[in-house]
Length: 184
Image (cartoon, rainbow, N blue to C red; front, side, top):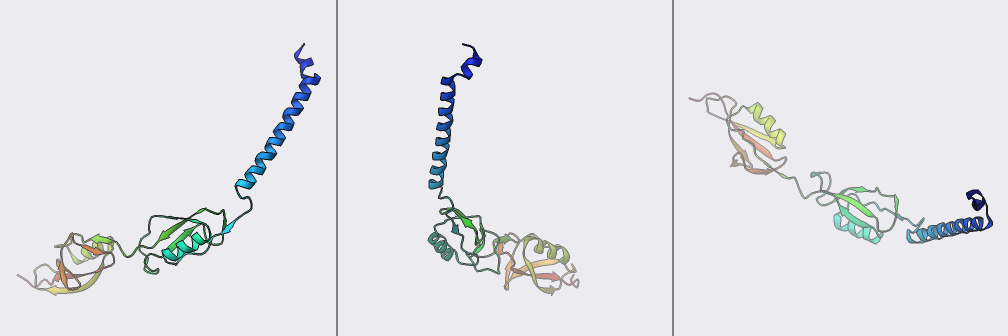
């Protein structure tokens, strides 16, 4: 029997038709199974949890049937209370499947600590820019008799002396003690 006669034989055509019917039935059953197991067209609306405390946000998201994943906390934002949610993804109002992870960014409890830089025996201008660069603020300026005009002689924070290498909260005010140029 030649290949041409075999392809157009009654036996081959019946087998081909049965294979096509089996493939269509298998695809139909697979699609129905996927529809049932993936909860097709069943959504949960993501609630608005930004600016809530973490505990409130956690309760609200668990009540909606959603999971929580905390992203690395951001830099402290004084506009929001400590440990409050400052961002969420996906955003509020979006439709998601039940059990979906909602990613939260939490405001830390306060500013991080920074190291006081070595600014003794440098000019006021350089000291101020170095302090601002590390996140500290310049507080009051006090002048004492010293030969170096506008040279930083010592540092203070809230009235107590500090030295380079000490740790202060970011945005703390550092008072400078400078020379007035009238010393020996």
